[in-house]
Length: 338
Image (cartoon, rainbow, N blue to C red; front, side, top):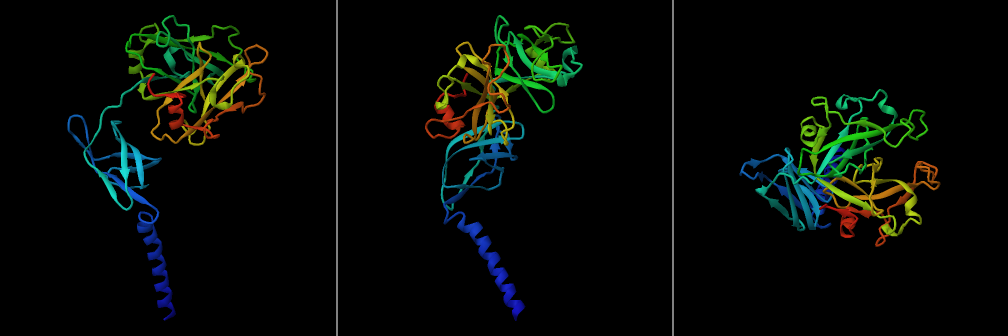
């Protein structure tokens, strides 16, 4: 009898837990469900495999996405990258919202990602790629007179990359210029000039790479990006007293890495602002800020603060916390059209 009673108690507990999960979650706490059953391509082809994202949550086609009641922006993608961005989807308490025949379209690319692999690029490979300290994109792709240097960021695999606005003319040329740090002190010393080493050779032609050829070789790819702007004179209440002394700026946050470990370098603009393009995100609640160092003695080397953390600029003056993507778009700190 005791075993029977114990078993009944266990079964009752299981029922209570699952009941709270399946019913209380949706009814008492104000949750509902979203299901995308299928989608359609522009030519009418049905798609039954893909991903549905809303409020930082994710589910596959035909799966239930549990959300608190409210209004959501929903992003639907298939396995080929076709996308639909749905605004104002209403989730009601204890109800399932079913989206059928969602119309997908090819993504509207607005940017180009350039990747420099010092171990393989263009026949002008680097003997000691780990010594590379700074790399810049240079060419017609970002300035007609080749005078703009776009700062590139180091990736975990040893490559360097940068994203710039898309160009219509794919015959435009470009290359990469870099400097080495041969003694490991963090300061570029080879070559000891402002010209750097040039890596621009297309081994097939002997000339510089064009965008068209670089796309074919996997050096350039189309991406959807968003542009972040750091204005040291006005940003977020954490303004810089001597903005002319800023020597390097990076964006850091959950918009580029879940653990905030990645630093993407910004490039200085003629108006004194700094900017960078990063891949666009679907979750507008993600946070970010900027970290920067000063060159107080004018020797071109960052010296303040004298540590690896830098000065933090992340404050949203309206909230006192870091900027979210949503708030930054409203304040013009992030541009989706550029």
